Structure formats: C-alpha cells, structure tokens
Image (tube, rainbow, N blue to C red; front, side, top):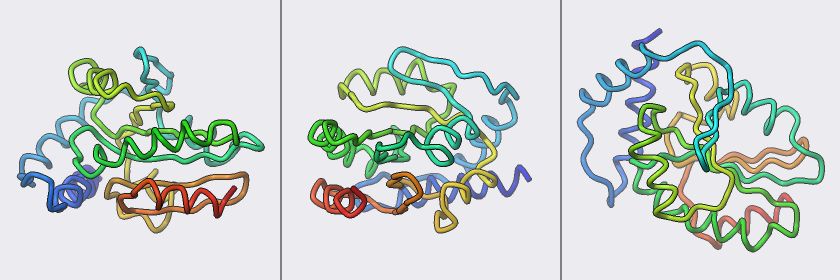
Length: 190
C-alpha cells in the first residue's frame, strides 16, 4: 500500500514538475520524502488551525464541500502546493475570482497538499508573503489512493487541479487556469 501511495505521490510531483517553467524533480528523492512523511502521520481526525491555515483530513473536507455543500454557495476548490510552480502561478487568478464574485455567493477554497511538517516554515510564510485571502486548508490525509478518486474519478493525482461545486453539480479539471478560463467555467455553473 505504501509503495502504491509513494508512486502516486511521485506522479503528482513529477507531473507538476513537467511544466516548462518548473525545475527538474528527482523522483527517487520524492519517493523517499513521501515515504518518510506518510509513515510518521498520526491517526487523529481533529481539526487544527494555524493562523490562516486550517488542517483537515479528507473526511472533514468531503463532508463540508463535496457531500453537503452549503446551499446557494458555489465553491471553486483548487488543489495546489507551494512547491508546484504552475499552482503558484495561477493562485492570483483564484484570488481575483474570490474578490470579483464574493457578492454572488462564490467561495474559493485553496487546498494545500504540502506536508503538514512544512506548515510553520513554508506554508504559512507563503500565505503571508502572497497575502492570500481565500479560505485555505491543508489536507492532511496520506491515503491519497482512497481520497483522490472521491474528488473525481478523472483525477490522476496531478496538480494543479480544480473542482467547481454547486449543490449536486460538480465539474473537475486537472489543469492550470488563466483568469478568463476560470471565470468562463464559473459562469457555466452559476
């Protein structure tokens, strides 16, 4: 099981790293890092908050945004990480979307897939440096083999990935967006 998880996470890292703007990724180092990180995780399902960042497991995320989304609210949920250059590049577009559509019951949720051990030294400083105002969660659930297909059967696990959710309607995309593309997709679900 750990081997499958490691391979899946390595695919996630490598797919993000294949972007022309991204740096080369050492796949062996990624697998080693992921294996170490996933073998030292706790089984707690408690929710913790670190300043602007809420730490949740997948069941909490799923119940809040996928199974029982708030009525009348349209969610634009982006899966990203601080180490993913295409993810970082598109974050301002999600921030602009949040500002421009908040009066239309649109809520942008940025779901970080960074490792929880990087919260203090990497993730929170990144959030502050870029002044991110959207809701931000850190998904702390190492069993990606289970939760990735629950987000979308189409998802290979690569990031960036975005899902638009409004009541029973969900649209999933495993790609980078421009602001215009985000707005166009949002308008199809509003």
